[in-house]
Image (cartoon, rainbow, N blue to C red; front, side, top):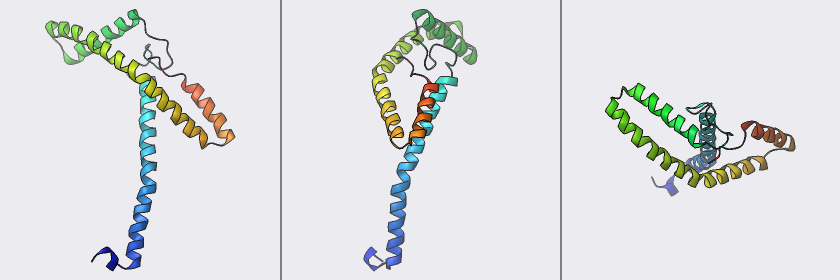
Length: 149
């Protein structure tokens, strides 16, 4: 049976399903984006670098702090993986290069991430009442400034 031969109720039901999917898909995408952003923020506040200079709102990392973090990371990996002294020496040459590349990428992406955060905040603020905007401003202050690139 082709579409024109279907009864009108079947076509309406199918159309209603398509419309529902079109309306629900952006909601689910927004929900997934919100969860991802929440995980990102919580990861930086409570994740592997919590309490270190990489945490959000902390000052930029100096070379001494960076070296300490690199040593801490190498120590944890060496312990968790039970590395031999030769493997540890190789790890100690790998980490500085990879972390430098990561820092470079983070600096490159920082403006795009900030623009996305700013546009998200503006979009959220646009749908809020004046009372909710005040609460939103308080929440943003509590979250602190973004981490320095």
